[in-house]
Length: 342
Picture 1 (cartoon, rainbow, N blue to C red):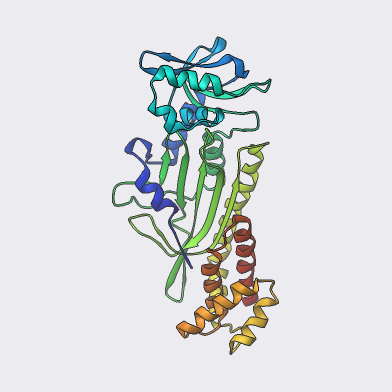
Picture 2: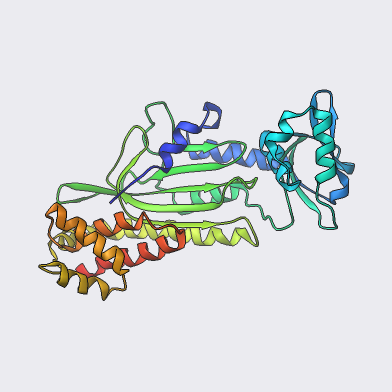
């Protein structure tokens, strides 16, 4: 089992104006932001930093002057290949000259997201935007019975949206199943950014409890999907919908079957010693290093080599894998071990 810290980290970095009380209020906010925003495409030679009083602004040709926020200023510096910290240390007039001299040239246009007269983001042509309201509309359709967790100790709701990104933490309060005195319920995190601050993604899981710091305790079957904002990003909505629907389908099936499966997994032994258990696990295509570490961990703790204990130990070992693709592949193989109890 794993303890998931994603919602905990979001809880303590969000300001009150980034918190929402319901999915409906969050969707309404995101849809309103989409309605007052527009994409502006300009050739690099039309995009000219200049000063206005003590401020640095961006001239965008016929689209007028645009004010910068912290994120779009950071992106502008990256496009110009100059240090944001250095530009921040000089006078606005000097900063504008630095950026003018280092801005990209060529024929490929720059893509700018503008709300009123504020530049929210600036990208090259490879970037592809997915609106937060598009993601939330799909979630509302696919996960109607899921809702935010109980409020955290500081009032945090698990539903957040700021200038740079969106994050939602949802659980099904009716999806609990009891297994040998332990309760499990389904939940998931979703995230997105309209301005390129983070990837689009989802993480689904079954958990035993959520504390008032929004730490998800004793999670199993943690599956994650992430996608960069390139190409046809909207196609990823289909994969995210499928993961939510799979989670809901497992919830429905497990109200009866999950209990029996886990109880049997707790009773099913894969061997009376490490050699027998190793052979059984390697037949399932699991990495030998992970298998040996999991078995050694159980051996030290004096736990039997049951299917349930091995799934738990292997999940712990999987967290240490460096690459998300490797973790996802291993997660799938570990989750399939439970089918041995059917």
